[in-house]
Image 1: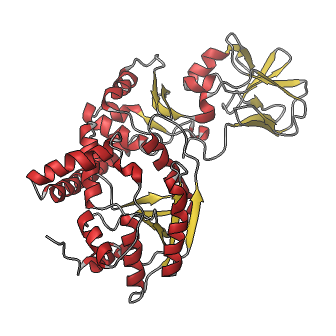
Image 2 (image 1 turned 120 degrees about the horizontal axis):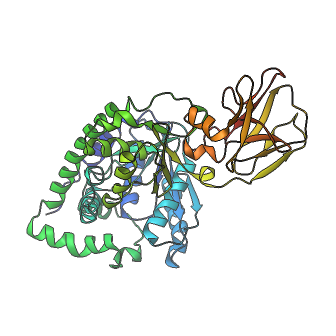
Image 3 (image 1 turned 180 degrees about the vertical axis):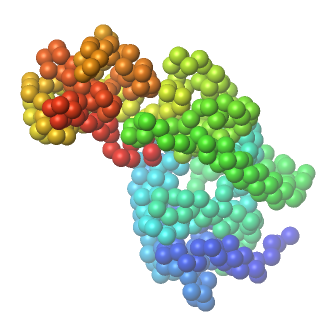
Length: 442
C-alpha cells in the first residue's frame, strides 16, 4: 500500500518546532535518499514558513572510489535548490570497526562546524531506529542503549536533531519518487559483512513479513525505554548530588565523587549513578567489565585499586574516586633544575610551579617523591614526608607527582599543601598548577 504523503511536511515542521528559533539549520547531507528528502522538504517549507537560515554540510570520508563523485552530486543538488553547501574531507582512523571510525570522524566534523544556537538536522528515520534497537539488543545493551537514537542531543556548540524518527523509509522513498528526486546509493550499504546491513537486508525483512507493524512497534518500544532512561537519569542526579561535594583537593581539577554516599546504595543504584557520571568522561564499559567498579568500591581503605576504562582510569583515594586521563597517566620527569625562580617553571607532563612572595636562595630544583624524604617543620623538627602526606590524606595518584622543592639535597617545600608549601618567616610559598583549567573535564 502506498504511504500517505500529504501530511509529511507538516509532521516534519511539527517535529522541528522547538528549534524554529535556532540561528542556523545545517543539514547533514550525504546525498542519499534520507538526507535528500529532508533537504527538499525544508527547502519547500522555507517558501511558506519563516525558518532559520538553511545550509548543508557534506562529509567526504574518502573510503570508496565511487564516493569521489558524491561531493559534486551534492553541490549540484544544493546549487539547484539555492542552498549553501560546505564539503568537509575527513581522515578515518584505522581500527577494528570501520563503521565506528567513519562515524566518529563524521560527527567530529559536524561538531566542529557548529556554532551557538545552531541545529544540525540528520535524516535517520523510523526504520533506522528499529535497526538500532535490534542491533543493540543483540549486543546486550541496557536501558540507555535500547532507548535508541534520541530525537535531539547536544553536539558541539549546538544541537543534533532527528526530525524523521517517526517517518518510515517507505514514506521517504515514495516522497522522493513523487517529486522525482535524485540521490546516490552507497554500495557499502549492500555489504552484509557489516552487522547493520545484515540486519537491514536479512533480519528485518523477515520480521516484517511475519509482523508488518514490527518496525513501528520497535520504535514505540524505544520511546518507552527513553522514558525509562529519563527516570533513571533523574534517580542518578538524586544519588550523585551528595557525592559531588567540595574537597581539599579540588585545585587538582580532576573529576571526583565522594564514596561514602555511594556505599549506602544498592549495587544497581551505584552502577546507575556512576555510569551517568562516567558518560561525560569516557565510553562506558560493558556489563562484564563492571566488576572493576565493585573491586574499587569494596576495597579496603588502605588499598589503591585502579579501574581501567576506555579513555582513562578510575582511582581511589582520600575517601573519593577520581577519573584520570591524558597527562595524569604519564610519569613526569624526575628532576627539573629551576635556574630562574622569579619565573614559573614548566614541568614536562606536570603543569608548572611558581613562587609567591620572596624566592628562596638557590640553586633550586624540582624533584618527585622517591621515598625516605624528610622535611623540617618549625616547632616540629624533621618529619618523614610519607607521614606528612598521610596526615593530610593526599590521594595516592597525586603523591608521586607533587612537586618537591629541593636546595641541593635539602627538601624545602611540598607544593600546594598548607604548612608544607613554604617558609612563612622568609615569606614565600610554592604553588603548583597541574594542567590547563579544562584538564580532565572534557
